[in-house]
Image (cartoon, rainbow, N blue to C red):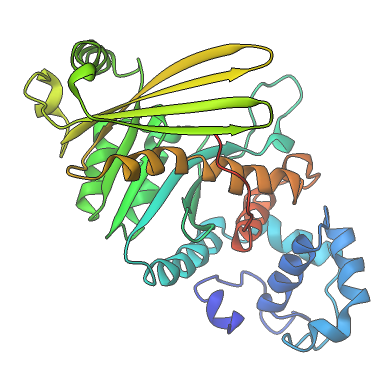
Amino acid sequence: MNWDNFFEGVDDFRVQGRCLHRLVDILMVILCGLLADCEDFEEIEDFANDRLDFLRTFLALPNGIPSHDTMNRLMRHLDPSQLSGALTRWGRQLVQQLDAYQLCVDGKELRGTIASGHKHASVQVLSAWVRQLNASVGSLRISQKTNELEATPELLQVLDLQRSVVTADALNCQKKTAQVILDRGGDYLLCLKANQGELHRQVADQFAKRYPALEQWVDLEKGHGRIDQRTVWVDEDLRWLDETRQWPGLRSVVMVRRERLDQAEAGATTELYISSLAGKPLPEVAELIRGHWAVENQLHRHLDVTFSEDASRVVKDHSPQNLSTLRKTKAKAGGTQQR
């Protein structure tokens, strides 16, 4: 890969003619250090100096390895929207290889940025994760003056959603989000909870009456001393649903019952979903619902366990968000998708 092209569109804010290091070299040194489990810029500098000969096989590095102060200064002031834009362009090239794909949208707090006496992090980032690629194809910082509800449509607006099914949690079960997904050429499958009061009530009431007559699909899984059973029903007859007219493209509703039996306890939960999909086989609907948790298990958990993102001591200015974007550039993991 030509890394100069990868970071195209990321402006160098530094005074030209007075810089010892190329922008792309600094970014790549930081990325390589993150992949080597370095936790701060001092560790990245030490790592890069130890492997200078190797790094010079694909980077210019005319003046050797940049200092940790140079890396820190760059990350603090580099425009995060431009760096995340590079990730989005890279993701667009990847998804073009797929006939169809699932895009999982979810937000994450960078807990290392929680100020003393506060409950929530000052930096929260929304991510778009393609399950089939184990790759992040877009990210956006959630503004302190707004929230994830407003950030999600903004992120989706810049993504190519053709051939995609977008899945999201109940927080993002919003008419505006559904409309943006349809406008961008995708379909949606959104978790439905009580934050959509009347719609949730109607779907729950009607499934309680109708599910015994509906076709069901059952997935049984045994292991680790427990039995997990997931049962899925899909109803595409929405004549009984008054709220249908208000939701763009709504064509089906889904109910999932999860039952667990182990040596300690037994329990069951039920979840509801709304979707623009119709005519899709039950096993594929079930796979989409379960597959949504890839964004938790293969991205968020990977960022915390492999990259120690929540424990990062780099918290000033744009550094936390920019480092999060670089971590996602190579954040691929195998994690399980059990839910």
